[in-house]
Image (tube, rainbow, N blue to C red; front, side, top):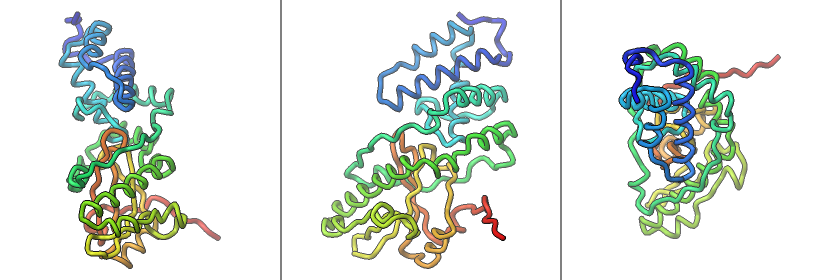
Length: 277
């Protein structure tokens, strides 16, 4: 039952902790393919904290928006919505600090559809300007840095590369080039890192295609690292090299491509420096 005295008031810490915990419970079911009913979760939460259905649904969408900024998967039925109450950042911080394993879910094998058009999407449009992001959210993103997290998650990177290998072979077979599909190489696995790309493939006409795979469980706008070597190889082979940005990997992988000149398509900023004497 709704507590009328709470209408129009800010959510308290215990209420936010309750809805964040319940959200992650649903998200775990979503990622593992287990059945769950959102309306039942909402009804139980409303009975527990006395908030309206509209308020609970809006807060679910707030949580999705924060997870989107953190480069994490979110529940598809709760489309990200801004206009945060700042306290939601602290509640999510508390939960992720207590449950760090949620930040790096074990990659699940993904089946590549036979039709490439089901996977390929257009690159994202510009998002919310950085200066408009709340300061507390910026600090949360810095603490659970999605770029560094994806970069260090070797199992996610390998799973994404394997997915692209299967995608490329499928794409070429669909183009009646089974001969070329057999020649696709997982360069990063067979030769090790250092080539400046992960996969050596082909276009249907037989021309070489060198693919650097960047994988995230987050959305298309999740930033990623690019090494100096990758940048230089992109400059040296502008018509052959490209990035495959694999995103939404945990919930339904999609790919968009980025081709040189990279500066035309993405904002490049220096994150680290090599210090020497």
